Amino acid sequence: MTVKQFIKEVFSTNKTLIYMHNFEAQVRRMMEYLQAIFSSRINSSGNFYHYPNHPKVADIEILAISSIAESFSINSENALFNRLDKESPGFLTGRISRPRFNIRRRALNVHMEDFLQLSHAQLFKVDVPMIVDSTPLPICKIGRISRLKACKDNPLIRPQVAVCHAKQESYYGFKMQLITTQEHSLPVAFSITSSRVHDVKALDELLEENNYLKNNEMLGDKGYISNPLQLQLFEHKGIELKAQPRANMKTPLNWTPQMGAIRRRIETVFSQVQDQFRLGQNFAKTFNGMVTRITHKLAGLLYCKLCNLRIGRSASLVKSALFC
Image (cartoon, rainbow, N blue to C red; front, top):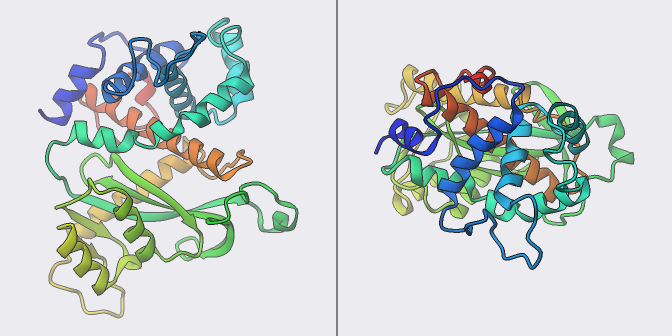
């Protein structure tokens, strides 16, 4: 089964246009996809766990609402509830309180972190070529570092001051490693590290945590040049990592200008996540809260791309995906 065949089977066959303001319709469509992905984990009520008092809002619906809200550029629970009170009275108000919604969403993120992995298993029955790159995750301006208390609760991963050489500027925060497919640029896996962790080390740890990524080709930029890592990945995982050479290096035989054009597709993904999903705005107070938000941003990005593929459009048209 191809990617397009799987999408047509999972999503509703209703061809009626769902306009951008119809939040409920988008949530129902996202729930269809989540139910197909988590079919072995949820019960008939759409919950991952057994609740003595049956909740009015199922677990699967909370995950769908969170991802669709990020797709609508709504990255605040307060803004989400206020908007839905005006557009869809009773959709959330009266069914669940805002604090309870936030608590359950963070508790359910342990399942949502597996969402990209499970989607990869359903969409791709064979190994596909990948792209890897990193992007900074600033959490505040440099001048506010001394007063900041957010996202410092995890002793293993702390925010640090680092330099983003691509933008030629300093920032304070973390770094995200992202792996996407070469075709359609679908997000496959991600990890968050301290901002000063080298891309080579971060990629090694990311692939150790995601053992399902094996036997494929992976393109990276100059930050992933490492003969020991390339040899290790090829021998243990069958991954052929090809890194773009530096300007003062002799171009290797396994790198072509076409590969450079393909590798730059992930930079478009970063631009989309920064623009529509507001990756650079952090409202989380804890590290786990930030991870939860980023997980739903990437889930929303995958949803938008699949909506485009469903009707035969280019997956990169993320801004207009909610109109289809």
